Image (cartoon, rainbow, N blue to C red; front, side, top):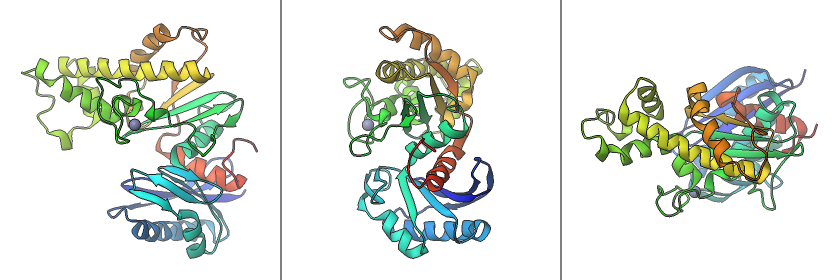
Length: 316
Ligand SMILES: [Zn+2]
């Protein structure tokens, strides 16, 4: 069986997986990123891919998922607010350093390709992945095709505005983007926004730096009234965005991944009913909402799948 190297480049670390053609991960190498400058990230990628090549061989195909707007045909990252890059020649520079071709695409599109091929998208023709982490990464498969758009911008669901007048400021500069309201960071922001209504609450005592979305969710499950209120507002915003996605593409299945999705049924129970209420012109209950199964590995698996196919495509 063929083996490829699938790399997930994030804002805090880079992971390279050695992945079989059936989606099995044989090994993984990870490196923390402390310097996000282009030269420093190139050195980190060369180091971690070098380790992966030690397992998979020098001739293994390499695919990389990167944050930002990425042109797969040139390998250029057009802009990436997370990395602070503009027109960064990631693909050409790495291909030259490694001496082998390297394919690059947006990280969320890679994750969608992975989840569609080997996870909860398998067997469907119309599928959406929403990764709820620090931000919201997303990708759309319609009619069996991964949508790329005119300039590789299709699937930026995280940046459609759901609260343009009263929402949180998004990393992209707009107010009330889906990502600002319904990512893991969004849940924390909902908790802070509600703090004046719960003066005796201890929920936020650990300080913003130590407050993860998981802590708020677990407190909500344990009955903390402040956490329950934050969770309800969060789930309401999440359902609003999901209902919009259904109105746009009416997928057969929407998978929720990322850190917040570890809430499992607790999350699905909170959003399904509200999504139904907000679904008007699309026949109700024609989109299943499920938890993604590949977790943090979806990006690597998708990047490797792209490398096998020599293109960012759902077609074999
Ligand atoms: Zn935004």
